[in-house]
Length: 235
Ligand code: FPP
Image (cartoon, rainbow, N blue to C red):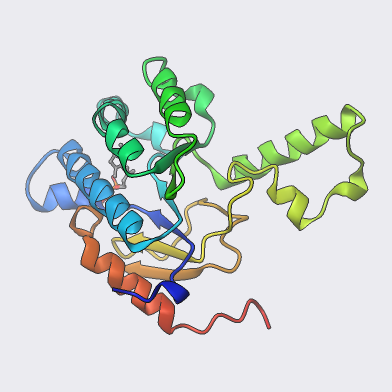
């Protein structure tokens, strides 16, 4: 098990390859997402056991609405099921759930559940799990700029009050440390509009493993690779 001293405080994951995993087995794509949910469960639990304090998962991008309606519907149903089934276990394990993205566009049957899950886990202190839904890194930066502008308009802040630190406070991840390690599964060398502001100094780890095949041991490999790297923060 990795040494806690040099553990990443915050891990972000671009979970990719559910569709390919299903295709390889001659299964419908939604079966890949179902298998992906199992991996979400295992990796969340493993991070919590290892002592990772923040985990951010890219579950649904603002581009994912372009997928076939049946696939989008299935993903929303899985999300609902995931909250219904796991909420008690989150509370028991002290995991705070935080959904990030433009929640307003999500279906009516999902939104109240997300709110309830965030409220029910608000005091959980072992780990924060951010789940990005209808998320776009550029939208997040635009939303932060709008929040700042409304404070200026209200006479509460002036242009000079804005710097890197205060700007971070307007992001969906306000108050959280930036990711130290960004993992992407299934081999693509892209950022895909994920946490654009927050990953400035993150170490990138890309594995060819498809997300449903990504296990605790693969997470530990990624953490061990992270520990070997010398982080210079531009120095
Ligand atoms: C990427 O695989 C995966 C997604 C777009 C969705 C992620 C969803 C899950 C892991 C399951 C549900 C999660 C929660 C939190 C309820 P892809 O479909 O892009 O795969 P491909 O690139 O091989 O087609």
